[in-house]
Image (cartoon, rainbow, N blue to C red; front, side, top):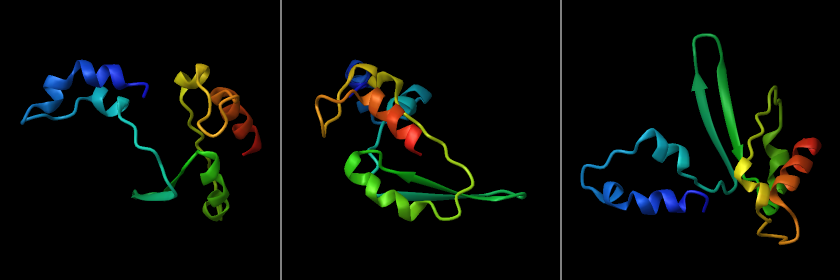
Length: 105
C-alpha cells in the first residue's frame, strides 16, 4: 500500500484509453510473489535462471527447493517497511524481520 496515494493522484491518467505506464508507474507497482517464480535470461556468455521466492513467512518453507546449485543471491527488501509490522505477527517490525532473514540466508 506504499504507493496507494500515488496511484489515486494519477487515476485520470491511469484510466485513459491510451494509457502506457511510466517508469514511475512501473517502479511503484508491486505484485506479491506466491510460490516460486522463475525467469530465464540467456546471453552470449552465460545463461541465468532468476528465481523469485515469496518472502512471507508461510512461503519460506518452499525456498529449500530453489537453492540447488545456487551461485548468487540477490536479497531485496523495501526500505519503506521501517515503520511497518508483519501481517503474520503484528508485534514484529518488518525491517527487523528482513535484517534477521538476511542474516540467516
